[in-house]
Length: 263
Image 1 (tube, helix red, strand yellow):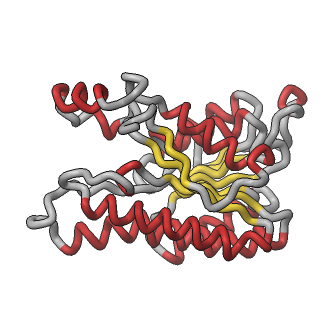
Image 2 (cartoon, rainbow, N blue to C red):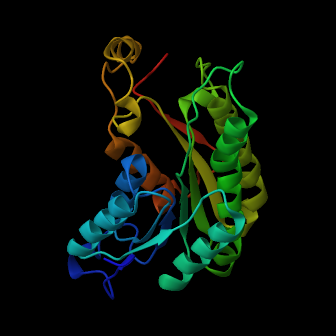
């Protein structure tokens, strides 16, 4: 599939769903939580643009799954930290589906290292993707949402923003900054009918946990009230809620999805 998969309109069996007629862009949607979000939004009727940097096969697979279910999907390669590529991505998504109603800033980067040994290049790259990237996407999306009916922006944060984690200082700093950005933009954009929220996942069953030693993983699970790792689909459902009119009076919030970690 050469980057695009689309049906001309939603099927009849989709017409009851809450996101019918909405256009959504998910950055980093080719795998993990991003892929789950793309599938979740599409299953509720949204036309979905899935961006990726290296996960072309994953993005196209997700788009094909949406298409086969009668939905509408479009894939586009873009570096979430590159200003011109992000601007082109947002414009392409809006052009493909006649506007942009939902932006999910999911693309992220983890460069684990102790502060004493972390290079400035690693630090800069992490903040560029995790903090500057969402800002670039949001800035590019605002004109499209203003000319439409408003919109909903959801950023993927992390529990690391509020809890110290050894070796993740740059990641934690980027996510803490993201939470502050979300709250400020919620105030700035509220009068323009644009809601801005964040979802902060805890330990989720994605590729990121495959490299965690078994003993460390078990120790972390013992700290979770529900005594299990979360699923990407569970995060995606919260994102879908925030993107929908069901959350029409929620903005400026950071919602934890962590199974009760540390409560």
